[in-house]
Length: 245
Image (cartoon, rainbow, N blue to C red; front, top):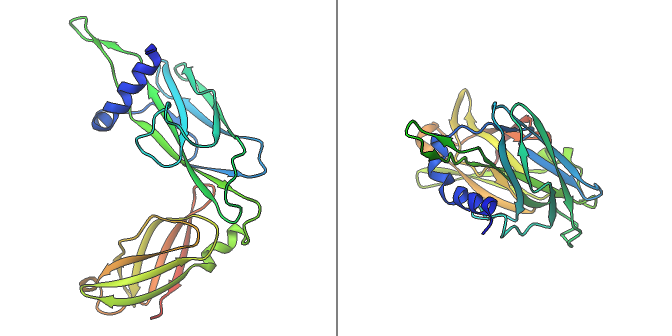
C-alpha cells in the first residue's frame, strides 16, 4: 500500500473521534455545488489558512458516509484528486460529469469529500505525532435542463397540512417538484406564539414527509409556518405559509 493511501485510510478510520480535537485549516468556498446538465465542468475553490502545507484528497460518492477514494462511485471525475496545498495559498479542483444516464425529470444528489492531511509534528521527546483531520462533505446537485418547473417556483409549489396525533401536531409537507428542497429552520405559529418544529432538513424530489410540533408548546392548532429555505447560492429565503387541516 502506498504512503498516501495508507495515510488516507488511517484518517478515514480515526477522523470521526478526533474531529472535536482538530481545527481544519483548509477552507472551502460555498456549502453546496450545483452542476447543470449542460455544464462542461464545475470548479470549487479552497484556501489553506495555515502557515504549513497540507496534503488534500478529493473524491465523490452517491451517499455513503463511509466512502473512501477506493470506493468512490459517483459518475464524476475530480481533478486533481490528490494535491499539496502550500501554507497561505489557494487551490481549485474541477468536477466533470462522465455521462452516466440519470433521471431527466429531477435532480440527482451526490457528495464531494475533501480530506485534509496536515504534516506530522514532533513532540518534545522527538516522537512523530500525526495529526488527523476531519473531512469536508459537500452536496452536489446534478440538475437536468428538462425539469418541468423553474427553480424559483419551488417555494410556492410546496403544500402543507396539519392534524393532531397524540401529544403532537403532525405537519404534512409535499414536494411535487423535481428539485431537492433544503430547510435550515422551521417553526410553527399560533397568533403571537411560535414553537419549534422537528423537521427533515432535506426533502427529495416528488416526496413527502411529516414534521412534528409538541402540542404543549402551543395553545392550539398551528396556523402558520415560518420556513428558511436554502437557495442555490447557499443563502436563506424566508417564507411564511398558512396551514389548513
